Length: 297
Image (cartoon, rainbow, N blue to C red; front, side, top):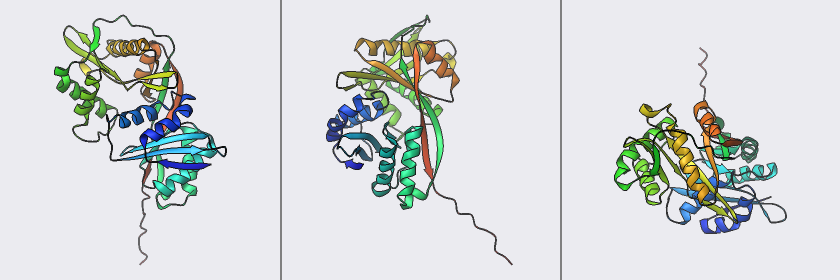
């Protein structure tokens, strides 16, 4: 196995297109983030675009890290994941954590530990688990209100909702301005929707940039947020179904992620036609704690 760290996001996208097409759901985040960076829509403190090649020279695995976030690793052979972990020890020894399918994450950490780099002595701890769903057959709920695109004049109100969403899912913003910036971007590219009831916004849902890998088109729903005053009335289901319908209309297969520990959101998505595809784990590395023993007298 050969591990490559690619500097050019455009080269990464073109080189990995065929590989990502073999598993477009589990590689969607990598593809959508790479496209956003290539198009100048997003910027991060630093970038790591990883490719693992087999002995035949073909791409066997891909991963990315957009600092300050964790590495996101795609499905790959176990030996490729171990090789990638060894490469991390050489070229990205300060990474904060890694996310992906559990067997791949475990193998990567094995390779990282085997590298014996200074950072590899850190102890990994599980932070959360997410469930990956794909739409099977859309069931549109019968709920009062209607869906529509978010409007420019609503950016401040919607940014506050985005901040609440980030707080509830324990997602740390890059900066204080990130919720407003993210809201503004989604409004501009017409990927943020509101569920309106009697003139009030009862729920919101967006979607990531649509990713095309060859002939396969994938749309990913999220975030989805309902203010506390409007919960348990079906509005999250309604706005999710509305966004899902918009993505179907552009020819996309539709997917989404949800917190494995949240039974409410999981039941909502299953009720409107999503089926479980995979469970993903997020591991973060912590510094070893030095325990000082009392001195003998």
